[in-house]
Image (cartoon, rainbow, N blue to C red; front, side, top):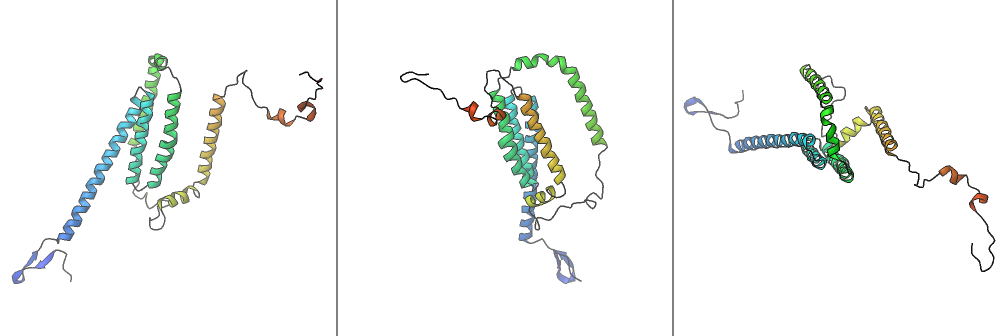
Length: 238
């Protein structure tokens, strides 16, 4: 029968214990240090994310709100990296920070919005806003109060998470997204297309003095209407 690790027979047949080797102590210390650093970075990213998200809705200056939103995206990307979802972290930085947030920033800076006029009706709509916020708070409390995780949720997963040795993170997301959820992906694309067209239609303004291109009129032209020949006398202009 084998002896357990750290066991050494003592003198005179008495059993005794000896301390673990220095290499094992060093490995335990490294693992403990990595766990502490992981927890510290997690709480750091989480605290900055929550604080900057609160500043997004509490800042009076919209430019400051967009800058806090960019900070929120960066720290959320850090949390995704700690979870091993590097693809989602890069998408969050490239798409949301590099496109959406920057677009918000330029739009807010270019529009000359009179915030004093916007704040004039704040007290008028405050009761309605408070009522809507109270209803949402009650709904969230009801959802969180009755929410629970089933014990066999991992065993009953239809599409289990593959091992990183078999598929990379990006390949696994693409495989699931374009096979099992392809119809939902296409529906989301159609919804975004309709929203884009709706935004263009709502913001389109027809001006009487602006020249507009009429494709049907251009295509339907013939030589009789396109060309006008005039006879000009010598030494005279039109």
